[in-house]
Length: 168
Image 1 (tube, rainbow, N blue to C red):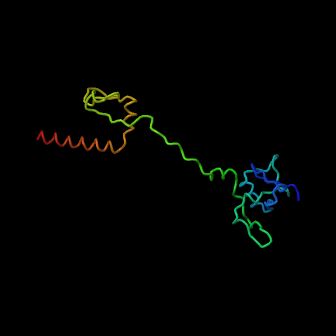
Image 2: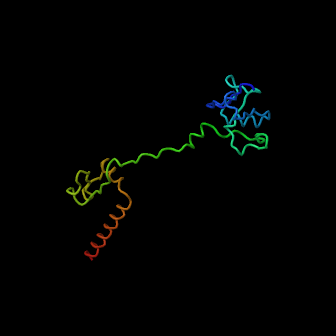
Image 3: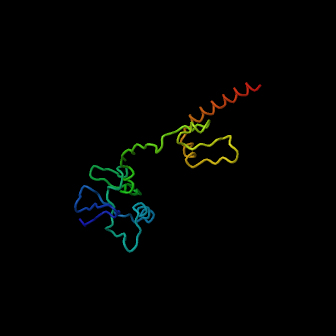
């Protein structure tokens, strides 16, 4: 047997060392040959030329790509290699990502008075002029989760309704 080795990049299969593999020559039909070349990510040129000894090993075909007989298995007509090292990397199980902890704990900003603001930035909504929130305050506000905000809105609406009743 000739010293056939697989034409696929990153494949080290060689007929001299592994007689359990089968090796398939490139078909002469131009359309199928072109599909094989595209599938194996090779281009004919100065570094790769298809000859009668150019082969692709059986590692790159699925079991259903073959026709089985009692004596041998043969590749079905028109099947293209589809198992490659570059798509096997995506199939390998990945280790679970590390548990991430927030950089800052979620904090509730109190708008009632500066005394309740603790170390957070404080913006008095009743003060004159434009209200520019500091970057820290904007970050703190973005850390709220929606349930906390909804509860705060409901509480403010209740207080507003109560004040309206007192005024009338």
